[in-house]
Image (cartoon, rainbow, N blue to C red; front, side, top):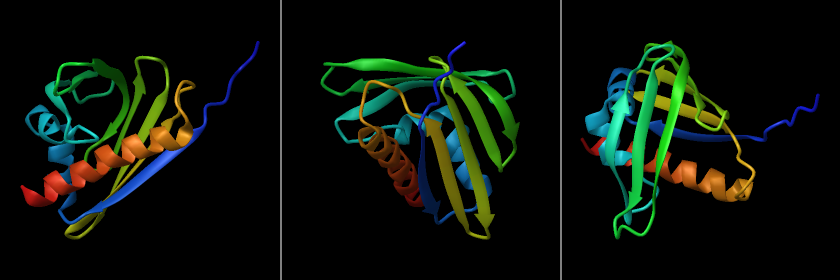
Length: 141
């Protein structure tokens, strides 16, 4: 039996907001559709979220010009309110997100297993851009 180790990639942002607000904006579909894109020429027209262990989530990410789009989905493996979200993506890769509160600041640390198609730095850049967009949206709303 052969096992292939996936390369872990970590992205981090500190948001100037309480952990309760950060959690709500991270997990509520009406907010997810507002921040879940890496650049202004992309958007997320649809998001569904059953936030519980064993629950499913799905987002539709599309280029605004209609040239490309994809579904991003998975199953939650662990949820700890205002602290932790863990899930397995549709392709089997695992993601672990920590929410660390420091009063009116919250640090979000997201670690995911890299896929084999794109370079690690490209993947890190894309996920960091989405996290940075989340920070901007949360702090401005």
